Image (cartoon, rainbow, N blue to C red; front, side, top):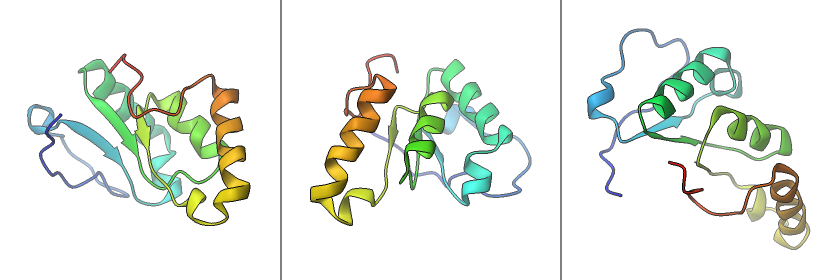
Length: 109
């Protein structure tokens, strides 16, 4: 899937999103913003429009769960970069807890 570069929504941004020009909604910025009710509403709107949603800097089980609840089909983070031998089994256990396979897309998006 080719993606046009777009700036992610940022803390406190207001206004209309040009949905026709968006391929993927990238939730980024502060943890408070990207896990907020406003970000959740944006993610739901994007999914209703058939768009994929990605969340940046997902480095904990809690944030991984939030990304799942928001309907994100992908996320990124540096959790594995710090202690991969210890953190890979933890991350895989989190994925098992969520009932999700560690793939980029789940086939629904």
